[in-house]
Length: 388
Image (tube, rainbow, N blue to C red; front, side, top):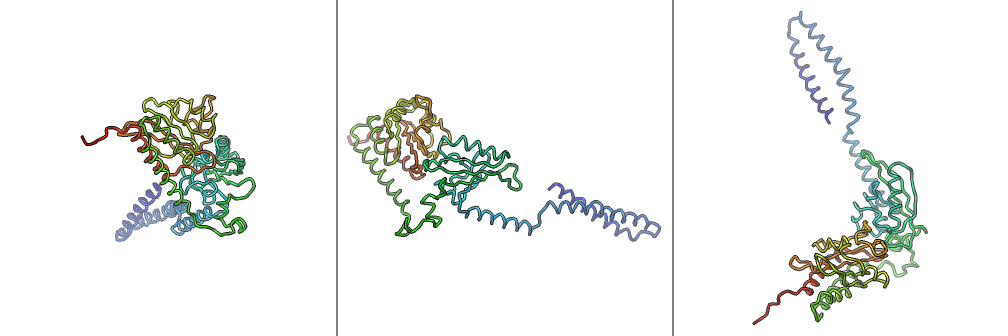
């Protein structure tokens, strides 16, 4: 850009000098040789300086037609990338997703637009994350292509072959890593096979049915909210422990695999833990909630936003053996909700989902936020206005 401006200034000066030479044609004949020498000097300047300078600028600035063709080629490549039948992801050296094609979205179970900007390791089981991150970094720094077997959190029993190769896009200083995901048995999951038309009539003899999953989830949330409200209204006592225990019973199983209740704000105390097994439940129940960063954050009035595939294994602290709770419980999604009324936190509810269970959605997080306000009201009803 600076060279183009300098060339423009030089060209303006040249045009000005040519105009002066044209005006000098009227000088006496004895002075014409001097004018002729100046004109020859300017011609040499054009041939030796300005023209090569122009050629250099022309080679670095693409033409309008070339730019149009380049944009069309980029659009074509994006379309091909999205329509590839194999799951493909583009990540940086830290496994942060830049692009995820349609097949990869269906294969990983990620919602459209959710994965971009988040680490691809968040979709893997905890045991495979470090190895995958290390191999991606090796490929990005130019150590050659790699391949390894990983497992997705949504389907931990299905081994997945991840093939990694480096790609250096034009105009970018760092390499991009192309990640190709393939099931070990080379068969697509049922929901993806239906989308790509590979499911046979023998597997679905009745044909493709309309997708009513969204309506079903909405009805389930309404039913859960109704059950929670009824439970809170029929609780005979406003004792915090009793309210939390009954609320946890509503949420456990039908809404979350784990429900952990802590009372108090400044110094939370664990009161209720409902989990899948006695030993694991007892280990979490013995944990001090003050050692759980997520609980401490929620107790200070943090946001109840869902955390899908939490990347930090230490976010909920450790059990007595030193193992991260999120890893031991195979947590794939969690909600940590403060129970607050009038700005005062009376407790914290933490919900875990593990294994292949779908992650908490934003709609479920909003419903849980509404239920948390109802639970807080039941824990601390405040003054009751009545007729004297």
